[in-house]
Length: 600
Image (cartoon, rainbow, N blue to C red; front, side, top):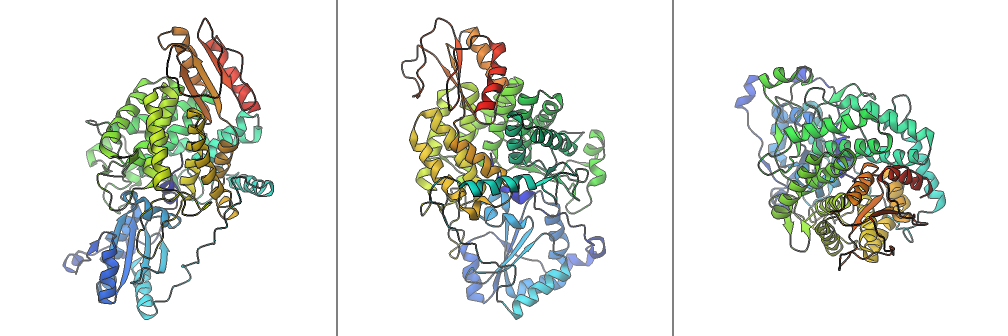
């Protein structure tokens, strides 16, 4: 489950600048105001008519330094004057527009981008800009509107010949993955510390193959990441600054909660470390308490770090529950996006599988039902919000497809497999690459006339993993072909060597290696079949398909495996090489799965 706004979120810079020295004065209430508008072609039309530039403030609702930009920089008299004279102003909440968010995710939030009236970029800046720096930039653009050094030419994409990563390139990717681990601070990444779910997940896979180095790296990272759990309300803060784990940024994104739920659940299934289960339960409690809409069961986007926009928030988060509530609760972004709900539904399925907590499954199912009723697009796709200004976006249908495949994996409900299949068909019909090997597109709709639709690496990673598993679940090679097309994009050296490397490695394994295929053969009313299914869930791995087949079913899901007739319920475990003899005892399942991981 990859998340492009994860990459952007972790780049939201903690710029400890001289905000107190430039605090707003009361006189600013009488100054002219700025007039922001949403992103649209109309902004560029107006800019051409009035001979102005377009300035994009790409922010996040939860972002502390975005609030500081609003309260300090965009209230400065000089900045206001320059903007009102020569700029058309556009403000976008990046969570609301995945297409624009993906386009500028490497710049973090806030991102400031200035365009010429024809849509070409002049300047791209990252993070908080204090008033003097902003004014200087605005003046320089007026004096000389030629593109600055921040505007780099887009790297040419040379598609791979096929979906195979050449051995030499694969070695370089593995070397990069190894080098991306910060040994002194035990975690992936060097500027900020956060739980990079794909890096940890790949380490867990290596650990399951008895790689002791990566057992330690996964264990240490998961342990350190618990320092980002809120000890009062539960839930995970976004990241820590200064290169260690002890200076958190206090915003809580649902995407981060889903990452924690997923990785700590997978870790617990593999290690049975109670700290891992406790971490997942802490996040579950927080999501249920703060980011769940009680009447509908859907999940909200985020909780702000700031009780009051732009103010220091560390003293607040040192308070206990009573102390915090006495001052108020930081704002919750109550938008309901299909993508974010899909991530959370899939993660809750993981928690249910490894813990047996039926409330997690109930919550996942309830959210899935609401999203299906209120966000479905004819043909199996999903909208992002109530109404999308652009879109549809690949991320929404992809995340919900993954969610339904996760539900099928833990329940065996055929309706879930049908919904996952419909999502894949919608993706093939609406987001296919414009040329072979160039990647599935974030959106078929241009953000503006000057920018053609682009693919996103993380979305293509997720698509490979989704369709590879779906191909096995349905025995339909169409979905393997989709995975091959996305993998060909990832196999290009231009894309494959981008950091972080674990997503590409996971996608390539999922594409080239069949998942562990576990089949329970027996009626759902039989207690032995139920016990075997439960045992399989408790040993869940990150690359696994669980099926439940009733021998009396007259219309079974197609499969390439032929199962023998038996007089009692049994479990079969198939790898890429062979299928096991029937397993009748639930207590033998975990050991069999572990052995299969070693050989798969």
